[in-house]
Length: 495
Length: 95
Image (cartoon, helix red, strand yellow):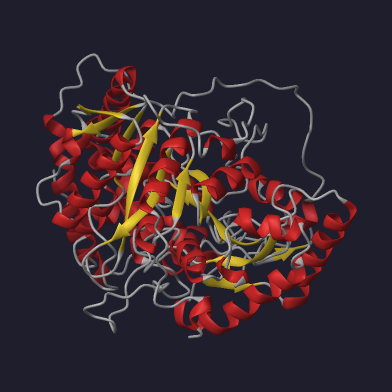
């Protein structure tokens, strides 16, 4: 089944000429035609001739022996990455017809390594959400179903929910995601795939539509930990056009997977044993701890005392940066314009019509916490708390090599659930946000199913720029878990 | 701290987001429910703690003061919903 392969398997098959890049691309286009109407994982599917032309070029490079890291591998691109001459919407009405005249650095690197783009995947509007329900192009539906309620449509997580659904269902071998407070890791966990948020600065932000710039980071969403390493190698690297890009060499990340984890010290943050954490999540966490012990790790309890303030400071800092970043959508230079008698009225009408409710409230919240009289009480305070959260991690990493936590406090929930109480929705990110604030790398690995047949993920956090140890530990979890479950809807199921 | 309708109206004005009077109440309520939760930050002692600005993994770089991008006026103008020749258009601002 060509749509069920890992990147690594597909690349080996292409190199051995067991199948062609054209066959691989065609199989995916067929799967998309069959399943995307039900899942809505793609906002834009590229025309068949465009996709097959990329695949043919890849086949030619294999024949010539010049194939790149990602050559001929069909992937989805989150519709937050600007792609030259391909509509890029951020799932927002204001960018519904935006066709960028340039290519983001990350997608340019993937193209340079030969990747075949299938289309642009769905997301929460401007990547603001945890359920992929705020997209102007309709919600993405998870390919998974609860065994006890098979008719209930579930969320794929968010904001990279189109990417996670596409990879889980066989509509792409892998996909790009972006993570500001958990938007790669949480949807990966909900859909039973691997998601890696690299260290802040690893992947260039240039050409990625900005949400909260001190937190936004691109990363791979894949079917295996090795694949995550491979794809990160293609995506990462210094870029002078991003002032926060890390000027460090890019290691051969995929080689870290399979390396022995014997003797590594794994920290279990006691504050993450939040009251009310469901039994199945706790049990999976204990299982993960047991697996790492068996693999020779030393497991110790650590304390991250400011954990509970992570979410609250995030929901000051992220909206503040969002209100500033999204000021550029004025209806004049690009995007939707609503005409009105005065310039201010054009701005107000264009932005009222162009942004959905969640984006509008985050802009308003951000404007408020930055406004005169409130800046010190909210924004400055949150930045200081962010320092404390970062110090918590740095202190923990003086005694341990990685941290192990659940990725999310539950399995996927139903569409429409958690919609009325914004705070309830924000709590989905409780375990992912602190690492985003500190800028450290985090990996979600699928490790098992809960009682209702839904995937659960564990999160491995590491030191700044130590993705390799994170990948080694993730690889050990993956090997022990042997997660081979498929969602109800997938390309191989003959839906 | 909590918002009243007048403050929400003022923020919306600052953010240049047109809010109908009918939306004002619901928006205020939503923001207040988030602010009520955020207020728990008040209990954290941050005496002597410096703010974390950005993620502090890279120092700011300098580069040669040369044009390294550009010459793409038409491509950029093509993104605009309305143009007149090589210009963006806006409603008249000066009488």
